[in-house]
Length: 206
Image (cartoon, rainbow, N blue to C red):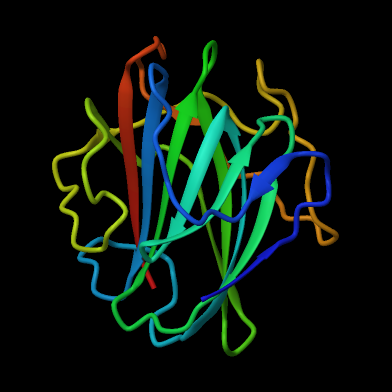
């Protein structure tokens, strides 16, 4: 799997050789599943082959990103969107993006836009919105794997779009601007006290 960091603004993002949770902080794990065999309705085109993903996202405060179970990057900042390009080797079993977000205090949220580019040059878009679901409690083991069952997760709460307080309008990263116009900041209806844990998921059909 090929990874390229297209973030050019002053923000902390780095490839990860390993993964460790931060202690005594509010955490959120997110799953974005793009799967050919999903039973859910979706507007994403069938009979197309995904070539790569362009993932733009901001977090409050620290995040770890996986694609198809492979750790890709650590990203920190809500004021700048990280922008990451991931080439796909095989998607016979679908595409899974997973993000673990840690809030170190104050407001908490995730704000993301994912562009799927197909081998024929066409694209489809997936954003954080009210269709995502959440699990409150301990971060589930293996949540970043395709085999994980998230069927009992609850619906998230949206907190507003690009420009909403307290985050404002995050600076776009990369030379080719990626639209964040339809993305929404998401979390649950809970505040984010220390020691609280949260996991979220969204499924879509290719």
